[in-house]
Image 1 (cartoon, rainbow, N blue to C red):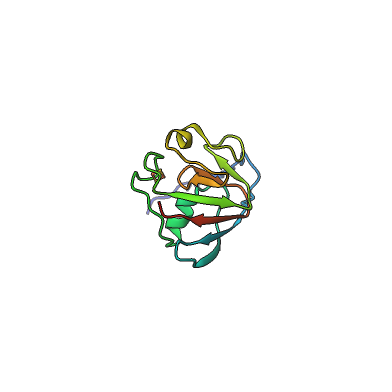
Image 2 (image 1 turned 120 degrees about the horizontal axis):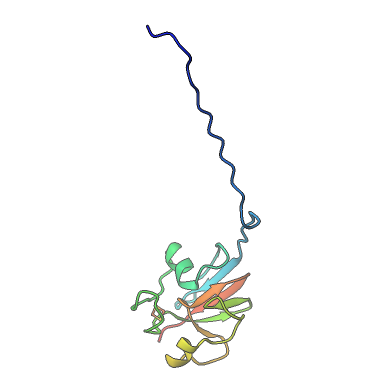
Length: 124
Ligand code: FES
């Protein structure tokens, strides 16, 4: 048996988080095309399309969520939304180019949730 000094290594890791560790979980109320209402919570900053698909809510997305098809059109009511991480509420250039019209009409794949919101899925 070897005699000698055993070396032990102690690795201490410290992390400094660059932001407060709080996650906001807004309430999203989906009204489906058939009138069914589903209420759920999700992380702030996710798109309407992401939230729908993660929760088994049928929402068309022919272009894969890239803002080129309008199949994810929905009416976003009673809440704060963010388009492409910019200002709250205005229709972005991509939505204008795709002919999205109406005060509440948005592309679900371009609309990020910032707070409690109601979303009505529309058939086009
Ligand atoms: Fe195609 Fe949103 S999924 S525009």
